[in-house]
Image (cartoon, rainbow, N blue to C red; front, side, top):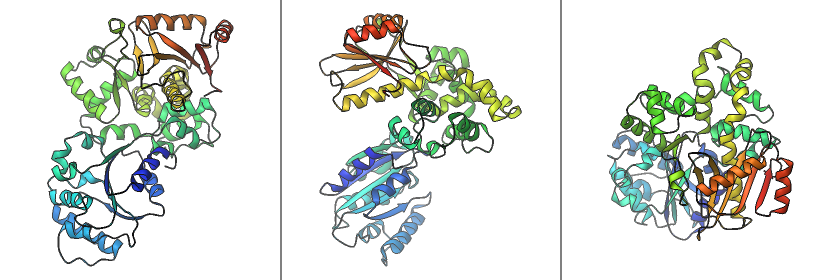
Length: 454
């Protein structure tokens, strides 16, 4: 997508550096990396090969075919070395070599990988080369690269790039005239998943998009959540049960155990698998010394679309068959939407603070940010610098207004967390009470941020 500015800038910097380089790029099935690649490759000489599942012999034949077609070369020997030695840029410019769906080559085809290493090390092609090795599976990247790629190639990787979801800011850019509220709600439903965003119509309202894309049987995202879970994960009945429990407030291992009836060791294995695909995450409470008052072992669904599906749709699919999309939305989604959006709003506020930090507009330079999850309350965001100075924030999406009592509760939780802040940020999608506004005017360590600022 054109919104992947930072990813393109990273690739461009590697391209402009002297010498050869290999960039290992990992993507998800929904990343729509093609837009990033085509945008980066404009005005560059490149050779592209899309791997498919095949025997080593057939893989070589397919690669030979592409070298002949793209480079107008006649090959005399059946070797990968010859294939990679005959590619050409046609001039002195750096050649970009893209090996897409690298995982399909298979670890048994060591000749393919060894030849790529030799290409990187200037043993096959004299001109400058930038090699993009693209993996379309996060789990493949988590495995032992030595075993998968072989020692020669694994040791030749110069850079890594993970092409995942886009930021909230990039999503806003893609939504045109959408209000901040509707943009946050859109982010709360589809996250920053490029494939889902490409189907969202900014000329329609948020409700119309949800009804047409997700709730209608003819909608392009109607089965997307199920497909995402079953694409590479077996035993969907187990994953569905665990995700439904998590989407409905069961956030600790013991809570999931009680709800599902599965053994704790089994749940741990499945949670690990879900984390490998970025579906869930383990929330480690920010450690500033208040460990005795913090919750431990809290899990959260990281993927917004998965969270939305299991929270609102999964248990109500029978009703969806009997109702129109609009009736289902008004009955099952609208009443609980504000509470659900709180989680997305915290993520948006985290990004806001990160941007301020990057621009040097915070009172300290944050090097670490997280959430303190307490037994009695939560501090939505905590930021720390190198000398253990802190900023903190609470984020309100659905309450009528952040009040003086909310501020006092924040101070109580900060004390339990052993966090002394230089400044606190109070984010509200609604408003602030007058007494809190008055206090903030007198106290520069209290910063109020409303929807207009976001």
